[in-house]
Image (tube, rainbow, N blue to C red; front, side, top):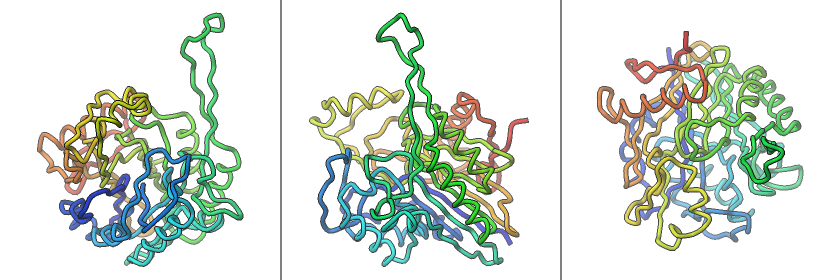
Length: 373
């Protein structure tokens, strides 16, 4: 018997009817044995916005119920919006998700809870453990022994001046994993492997909006996680697709892009310095004041990762291509269609540009990942 695990990209609904976001994907998500998503908002009645929060939307509590109806089983709160609205909204969000029947991973009342895996037993007895971490962290959004928040996988950045006699010229950027966070992540994976057959690791990480680029620390963390026993890595945050690779046969999805993510825009925001500093990172990004999906053009191509599990291991990995139009509703695209080809071709291009080894073949159930010869 083969079981299916699906992993979607970022979730940040901001509309009157939350169920609208899932009308085209609900049947597929509900049919899977496990459906996983990354939450990028808060489902709470009230909160106090923290000063370090950049883009923060306080969504209604019934957004959690809509996620459950959409078919999600496990939700990661390990991300850069986990504490946007303070501790009370954090705990209310977590409680609302759990009340709706979903399990929360990657965040908790303290660091021990944030690092605790969610373990699911599949129909054939295979046990699947999920862990979640974030590298994208406003200050103090990570949990510690006495503070709520998410499980961190921080990184350090070093800027090296290339031409030392030329002040102001561009720098070479180096990134390194935070040593203590990486040791903790490795320990968590090893411990999870003791109680589960398959360990999946969600990482909210990477360089947003910049085509193809994978930061050095991501490659280091991916290799360390796989060496510690992770069977697949599911990446989020970048808001565009990034390439994939297979490390010792284990799939690494560097970015799943968005799933149900609403983003409105008005002329004031479009003219702001903060938006235009980010806008230049993307290949093409034109504000659309009538759209619910104000992301770069590349963000319309998305995916849901698909893992097939049997007899205690992943036997096949790949993805289901998505397209997200101006209404911000994700829709699966049919093999043979122009949009399906657009997603697969884009993935092939950015994977090669990043020097990653995955190649893609359209199979019967999904676009399958294969290692380059």
